[in-house]
Length: 459
Image 1 (cartoon, rainbow, N blue to C red):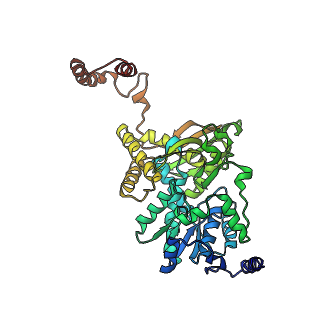
Image 2: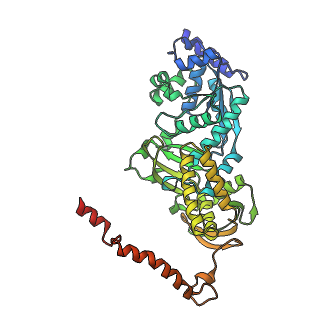
Image 3: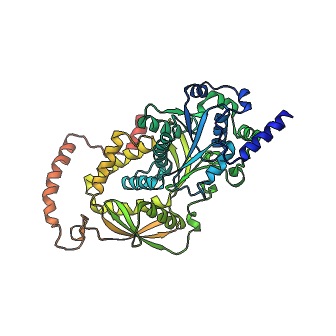
């Protein structure tokens, strides 16, 4: 009878539009105490929880509130393509009796994407790091919002095995070393209570909160998404015997399902940034949205990789990033025209460094900032209009025009007679080069045998 009465009281309370209750409910007396949560209660801390409206988010928010912790929830609007309405997150979290604040970070993540594209900061397997970009944008934006709302602790839902725990906590640490971080899935008490999804569902159901796991019915993997792209991993994708094609693209189609006719697209770049698509001037967010549509319908930007995680393990992922792939291929054509050989070599080194830093959760580190600044310096002359032909996952180069800083001159590279470089003048260069070549030969420093065969003989 008492249990039934309690459920009725809770239901009535949740039905009230003004109910936010950061107070411990009767069940808190039966909950196993977490030393970490108790310290927050004793210190009067306010915990800001990063939520998505999913099972983990609901479980953590309700569990902390039941324990008597002061809780406020925050969600980032980073243009999630798998979320029809970001305000649905507020509705999903409402039954947990918590306030949820939506922070609009779409312009910020579009800028992050532009920076990654200019740096060509893709990771293993051509992964455009949609998650890595999303994490520094989200951490920065939500931390600022949490401070405005009086929070003193940031809680994230990352597991103790992945990259995101490192990213979230390091970003908070470098932005505000005094701001606390709570990782519920490293709290021994919560790990014991919720070893799996079944226990989370049962916990929510005991409090009259429903939750359906869509992934079990429609897909067999988990997805992290924002306007930069999607990262699909876990569950069935963990087996290397499972084909990547079990993934149902959200931002586009598989190349085989793309149109049978080539689509031409024109992209205008100024200082390494796309400023217009098909002749129309657009802001970064608009460019990214449009390029996602164009690239997506033509099957661009779907890749798979066994990426090297921060902690040393490997993770299999299937990724989508149609807009970033389209823009990345286009800016490469401009770079090829304006960067000399040594600048290109330097760019590749800077690109690799920026890529690793974003992946490792070190976007705000000094070396990252210096590298990005150097890339923007190299990208200053990257001005031109690129036309590509998109066909079933491929982007074919059609033309590069209006590129005033190009160092490509047909006359110099032509195989035909021209007014460019005089072939005879190469004689002097070859004579100088031969001095070193002959010296190395005389010193018996040159080995022309197969390296592989020699290794086998030595072993």
